[in-house]
Image (cartoon, rainbow, N blue to C red; front, side, top):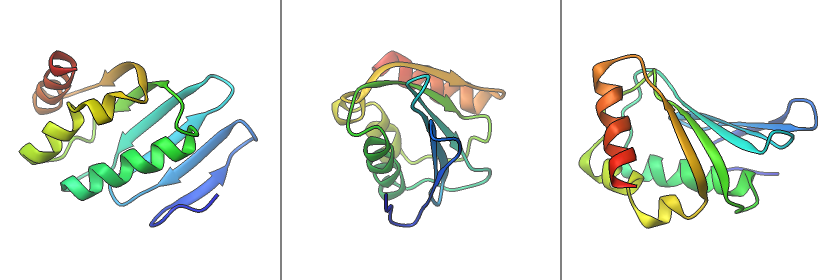
Length: 117
């Protein structure tokens, strides 16, 4: 599998890991869920969020899956990024979502996403 600006790695035949500019994305085929971890201190632009979404969709073969979003390394997101995260496009491949947080800013973003989804 080829992904622009990323590294694809088969960990044990059941997991696929891809690293983008702003995230580490792992699809656990055995468990059937996607884990997206924000990289520390990355400024996320709309194009980054859209790219991460496309990479994640390719990893799951565009199937709906539950997502674990680890936002403990939360960085600043523009209003455009927050709007994209709350969009129908973003929700079309997600069956359920859990957000890991450890700070007030990441809690605010997590709550915003959950309330608008």
